[in-house]
Amino acid sequence: MSKLSLDRILQSQGFGSRKYCRSLIEDGEVAVNGEIVTDYKLIPDTAGLVLHLFDEDWEYREHLYIALNKPANFECSRKPSHHPGVLTILPEQFSWRDVQPVGRLDHDTTGLLLMSDDGAFIHAQSSPKRHVPKVYAATTHDAVTDELIAQLLGGVQLHDEPAPLAASTCRKLDTHLLEIVLEQGKYHQVKRMLAAAGNHCSALRRVAIGGLQLASLELEEGEWCYLDAGQLALLAPQTE
Image 1: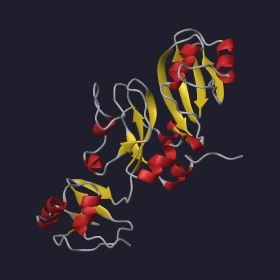
Image 2: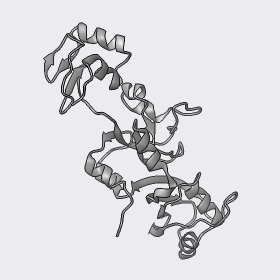
Image 3: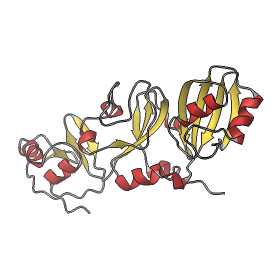
Image 4: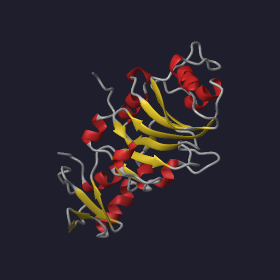
């Protein structure tokens, strides 16, 4: 059980400064499990706690773990330079909670993007030592050939990399579409590997991270969802 007072709980959930949260409570703008509360010193049980304010219900969450089906032309940055940031897709209070993308997708790359305010989770998921496979569907400019697949599986040399990089698995999905699985997570890796193999990536979509499949989340582009414990477990390195 949390020892936090109601104003501190609201602040922890990203609804503003402690002073502002106090004013919301005192003005009768906040309901706790369906009952209006005006005492900001109340210490509610956070287990199963549901807050109601701004005409919406908000389940208390110590940390946020989010999956977003990222659209094109959004930047995975808190300070975007040329396109809107992915945080603009989420509720405004998530920015107050310091939600950040877990890794990055290029502005024109779509698909599965994890986001969280849990620093330990972000660090663990971003670490190359974990070897969590990331699965991409890449549309190619030229037709997918057996030779291209062989090159990607055998390893291609990228500029500024000390050794060739190889796909964990790679298979043809259609004449100009392939599935490529990577564990390294280098900068623009799929695009650079295809270019090094003599082709060109004209569109890229991340469809899975570890055992978490974007299709299983049933999210349209631009939609997001909270991840439950079972879905988070799928992000761990898979063992035989």
